[in-house]
Image: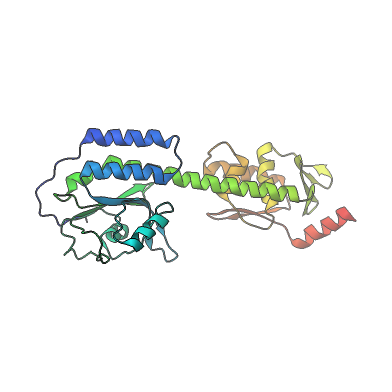
Amino acid sequence: MNHNTSGNQSNSPIPEKRLLELIATVLSHYICETNPYVLFNGLLEALLDITGSEYGFIGEVFYDAKNQPYVKCYATTNIAWDEDTRKLYEENRQKGMIFSKLDSLYGSVLKTGERVISNQPGTDPRRGGLPKGHPPLRTFMGLPFYGGGKLLGMVGIANRENGYDQDIATALHPFLVTCGNLIQAYRNNRKRQHAEEELSEYRRILLSRPAAIPLGGGYIFYRSPASLSWDDNPVLLSRKELALLEILVLNLNRPVVTPDIEAHVWPDTVVGASSLRSLMRRLRPKLPGLEITTLSGMGYMLTVPERDVTEMSQTNHG
């Protein structure tokens, strides 16, 4: 249910041309700017100007260990009202201030996933109160934004002279879509960066392992160049099958998550889940006696009894 405790007359519409120019500018900057704090601060300043608001924030939604939502802000207006809050603002503005009070107007957005408009926040039952000395909160609007059907973040703006209404919220839809697209892009970048870091670690492990890695059952994996033998006979595998086996061998008896496998096998290509499943279906029949376990919703694991590895290793060094 969308709330509007306004009681005010309808507001002037948001200037569509300026809004579209803002979106175009931000998207063009995204091509060369990887810091979300830079982009979102520019977005927030323009949003405050377009809506005639005094202050606000834009942030990404995360969930804590108890699955409770909170906002990590990428852009926050400096409304510090004393020395301590000024210091707090400066310390946190570059790493993201955290808003986690659910019994509040912005918290209502997090709990419901819906827009919240309050033009009488002082008496609104959803209010959470303001810290001593905080600038006055006369009007408030909180807008969630989504991506892939999931709540990604929210925008909060305050103190528009004539209050907020549903027309303003609706007019800002393209702005919210842009915020959602940016957050999704940053999340994908974080996943990719994590996968690349994991891949570098796997390569480091690979270089530290012996040239021949026994897998038991007569199998030996050779790391440079990557190849596999069984009872001293080569096992014919495709390049991608070898890459898939390689990352499983590097993590022998340990789970390997799907994104890490995909980054290793297809380093320059984004593939769907079906590509990995198809590759695994081709690989397994070529490795009778080796156990590759499917970890539902997670990834795969090559399981080799420690005794087999030890025995084969002793034989190779004997």
